Image 1 (tube, helix red, strand yellow):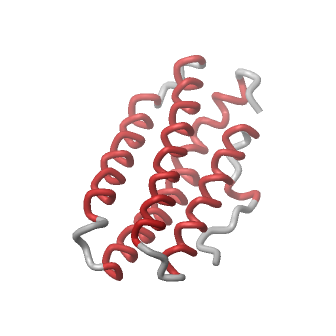
Image 2 (cartoon, rainbow, N blue to C red):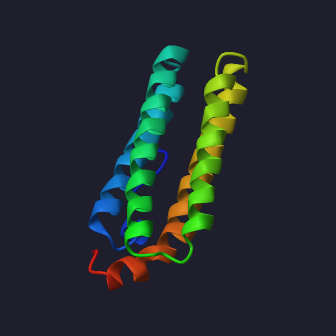
Image 3 (cartoon, rainbow, N blue to C red):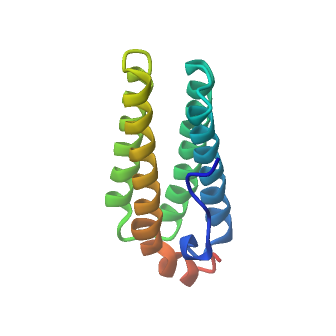
Amino acid sequence: MTLLVWTSKNSVGVKELDAHHQKIFSLLNSLYSSIAKADTKETSKNVLQELINYAQYHFAAEEKYFDQFNYDQKDEHQSQHRQYEQKMAQFIKDIETTPDFVFSYKLLDFLEDWWLGHIGHEDKKYTQCFNSHGLF
C-alpha cells in the first residue's frame, strides 16, 4: 500500500539527500501498510522506530552541510528538526495508550503533512546554497 509516491517535484537537487527522502517515503509507506493490514502494535512500533532512527540520520547529514556551507537558515531549519523529533517521541509514548484508529490517523496525517511540507518548502530552500558549493 502506498501513502506517498516520490516524483521529480520532490527533488531538492542533491542526490544524497534525495535518496534519503526516497528512503523516508519508503518507510512511511511501510508504516502505512502495517497499519492498514492491522499488524500488531509491536510491528507498527518497530517500523515507526526505524523511521525515527532514519530521520535522525538524515537530519544529521543535512545539518553537517548547514555547518560546512554556513547555511543562513540553519537555526530555523534545525529547530524544525528538533520539533519533529519531539513530536515523534510523543507518538512513541502515545502508541500504547491511544486507541488504534485514533493513533493511526493522527500519526499518518502528521507524517504525511510534515514530510511533504518540509521537503517541498523548507528543504528546497537549501538547494541553491548546497549546489553553489558543488553539492548536487
